[in-house]
Length: 355
Image 1 (tube, rainbow, N blue to C red):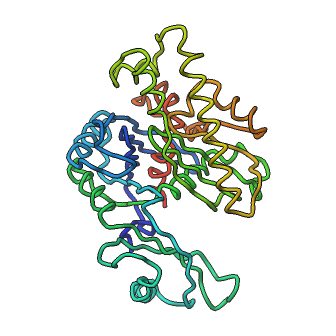
Image 2: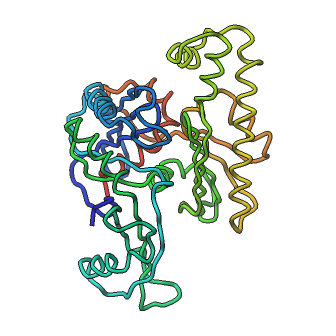
Image 3: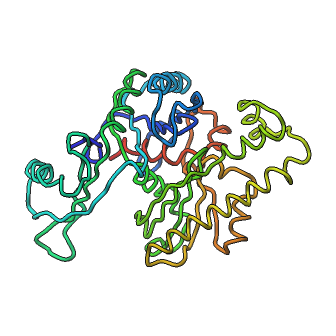
């Protein structure tokens, strides 16, 4: 169908473009055999409030940032993949008769979709993917149905077009994270039964994805992120947003910064992680996770992983999707390594090139 793009096959390189609340991140990958290489990468800050809680507010500003990030990356690719937040998407596993052609299945699902989707069908973008034969009835197939308010898709498509890019895939963040997890899953033993919690802590949102055997079983978003640290730096030291953001990354703050500002923020992150996992435990059959992976910009904070591991008694690692990749000479490898935990979504999107 390709409306959300789960099924669309692609032969040209795809730019993975992660549009977050504070920046757009670009990643382009190539692959030889089973080895990936980073061909292009760039990050461009967005104006304040251009994107709020993953909803595009100012499409022209996002389009301009996308144009700028493509230029900065020196990539010649024009086809692009973006994602919508999991909270903007309704997914439902339904059973359909086996043996239907894709066209017949599409017609049937479109006819029946209104019983699963709580919005008028003209307001949603629909897609589906056949998952395999149903365990309960071998004559039926399990079909994953996904629906998103069309406005969320259209705004992303418009932003890409403003940047002279071809929108090829609109994916769902939870699935892009699952795909990117494949790049780091080798770090885990007994992958078949491993329960892994990925906490993507961005500027304003924290998303918990729980994967069992590499497949997503739970995802939840909460309002919490690195912006709270930036705002506290601003407040305490009388800095602008830009100055506070730079100081947070580059250092140079007064001696009391660590004890008075950074340590309390890290404690707040630990609380948030604990709370997110409690929500998961209370709504699932699980009461423990085998491993925690930290992603997002906040994951780079020194000592955070160790602190969470110590408090929760669970092994913690910081996501690096590029650990086993080679890097093009035109890519700033130091900056890429620094931004690696925040590039999981972009990596998952760029991997759509090889579907």
